[in-house]
Image 1 (cartoon, helix red, strand yellow):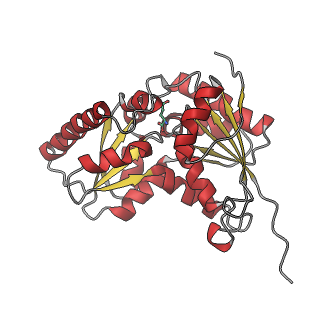
Image 2: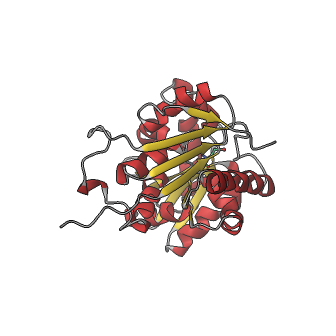
Length: 284
Ligand code: DGL
């Protein structure tokens, strides 16, 4: 007789905006039977241009909402900025395990890089924290980080395949590659250190020098989360895909600003309709 399926956990996932839906998409692919509550703190976005103190306050309030109001038993911080500047504050504020995206991203870069030199693009706050440099150094890698503050607004605008975005990417990557060459680095890996950037992956892949691999911290974080849940959620490969089997994954979406915009753009990030979105107020 087969053993009864374990009760699926409730996993809370949050980002400052829609970008974290790229992590949610990767989580669902690996754990389609878990129950997910996703919060996009869209009213207070961007986090990436703010101070550590403000980011920590916003991130803790978002985390507490998911744990206290949604009963999340586990949190995935689907935002590099919040992971870089507020992981400790979140862990101190909620009584559940919390996974950020920086360590999985650095581990993935380690697995991909032959030369040991990696490039990281991220928000201004993430770069100023040097969280990626430290995580990469712990993996024996040298990381060169660059803030790309124009990319998040372009993605939030839906300009993911637009000539202006392509030109902005070209300029940022030219500057980063010139800096790497001046330092004598031989980078073979580019880490997308912001969960908004996977939406720009096709444009980014066209702009990196040949032979440079693009690493998505969203995929790496979902892989780590799935490993942590081993035993509580059967892996995706063991069961029919929940969506194709007519058993949709249970997803509850919350936003702190326009639910219409969340539904419209969020579906693009998730890859299919996000369903009903509930407006919540976390204060200013
Ligand atoms: N998605 C966030 C990240 O991964 C950045 C967005 C923002 O600046 O709020 O860093």
